[in-house]
Image: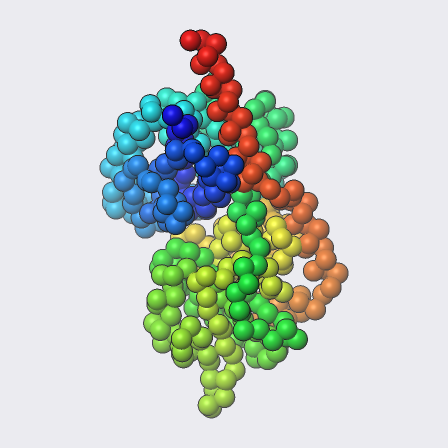
Length: 404
């Protein structure tokens, strides 16, 4: 009988991390029987690689981001959060007894689900980093879960956090990394670029409708940049749901949309254009000179491979000033946030001045490359974690034989 695993995750970024670990597991041990329980959202990252989902799914108004504004939790409850969470937990508890191992990616919610499954589990606390405050402030519930004998290994997203876990007595902690970086390589997509001109990437995030609001702000920023330096090219990496709404976004902002290209004209003359893709994230990120970002994991990935980031706050629920400021602390010198409120015309003008200046600063661009390696390297997380999963299954098999 093949080993049976259940992946639990509570967030879109967490689903993404888990999906890359699963892809590496399938390469190393294709016979594994793997299923998933995404607690937030529809679990698209799992569905895209044909991982069966064993629990009901629910898209929350907050997108899972209630820590920056607790009032959003009320909207989630009205949308069915409590009922959905209970049904998800029941589904996990029904499915888990047939599993050999559970893998939980996320914060306290996902880790509690793993604990309540009753099975041995591996924890990957991907949203948590000691870099934010210098040390992790771990609440009592999460501490109890992570120190449970059934928690066999505790992975962190960066080496600094692994050391902090060890200092706090979590002896099972080790460095994991960012799994998606293993496959963040150009795929050969034709971005229609002029190689003699700088290119800026536009990343508005993945959650609807926030991503559409963010895209409108970033189009405003692109326009201001183009007014200062008409040589700059823009490429947007968008999720399919935003691509299908481009006509509406363009209309709302006074731009024109033609087969995925957004253009702003004045007196019949093109002032700025943004070419949009739903299938070129890796190519855009690997090629760009600067990221105009209003996203979470996508910005982390860009920073890790050495790209500078410029952020402007939005209205949320995810990408508010509080989130952007936390990104500043996590990513260090690679990121700059302009403004402390949802971007105004004045903020956009200030951000545009910064963007034009920074892409010409060779010393800074080199420092970003070093910073990405230092904070999130070495790469290879999905394979590093997958190998520990396989070793753990072997140890569990050996323990069963001893006890038989």
